[in-house]
Amino acid sequence: MTKTFTFPSTPAEAQLRKLAHERVLVLDGAMGTQIQTLGLSEEDFTGQGSGCACAHHSDHPQKGNNDLLILTQPDAIEEIHFSFAMAGADIVETNTFSSTSIAQADYGMEHAVHDLNATGACLARRAMDRATAIDGRPRFVAGALGPTNRTASLSPDVNDPGYRAVTFDDLRVAYGEQVRGLIAGKADLILIETIFDTLNAKAAIFACMEVFSETGQHLPLMISGTITDASGRTLSGQTPTAFWHSVMHARPFTVGLNCALGAAAMRPHLAELAGVATTLTCAYPNAGLPNAFGQYDEGPDETAAQIEGFARDGLVNIVGGCCGTTPDHIRAIAEAVAGFTPRATP
Ligand SMILES: [Zn+2]
Image (cartoon, rainbow, N blue to C red; front, top):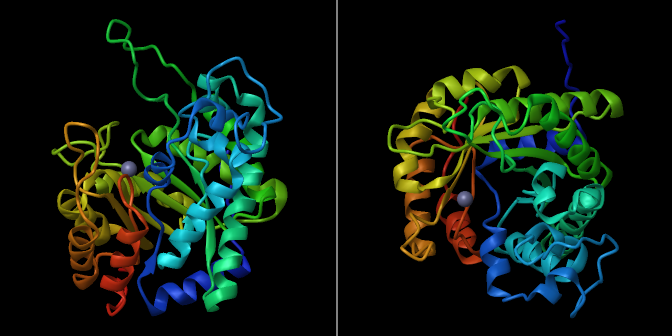
């Protein structure tokens, strides 16, 4: 069955398109890096120490379940969103990268998924409204969908190549539940990010279309792939051009790349994508490559100089930061791209 979806613009989308025409827009930086600096304990994660004791109980330890902090340390998460907004981000991502029943199963928190997404979007919205009240600049909330920790097109078992740990339908249902929560919390956009397996992303896109049809509310989609190795392909084997052709049917607001590589290594793959994509492009690399301890050493000026090159060469419409990028990185990036004309869509 072929179904054609129409995309009436939401007021936020119309405003975003107008702004994106005028200048290179700025996305926020890494939530995880900011959470790490808080040095939170198991009691902080569950809210049993300081914070809001979570209404959703699980016997699993919760330390490391960053998304749960939406419910147990809401003020801290709102403050991180606010600091990115004040650093110059036009769009911030909700702290919901792992807020699907599939990813939360690791923590026994599948039943918290609706609250994580709805409250996650509310917190980001509140932080944006506070920032806008200070400087009058419009700001937007992107509901973040991560890839989950399972892949639909590859087997995790080398002895059983036909095996799949998750199906398209499992992913479709889980993403649908997530997107309903994000819409309930009033997200302006949906960002499907860090895509290493295009089939997972297609399930996320399909879920979005189903929920949009249900609610009659079509949010703009941002779709962001991850190039995982030097050959310039995603984990499921696609080049940037093939990736674009696999997702263009969704008519996304943006297509782009994030994570895995620093800006320097991302650049040729971004250039390829920018050459074929008939929509806006978005790039948010890591702060360089991780060191032996898994930390990112690239400073704000270094990252910003690379991203300035993306803007100077007309490769981007939206830029930001992934792993290791702080509010200082976002401030430097926003200043670096401020004077450049955004990429013209071919
Ligand atoms: Zn990253």
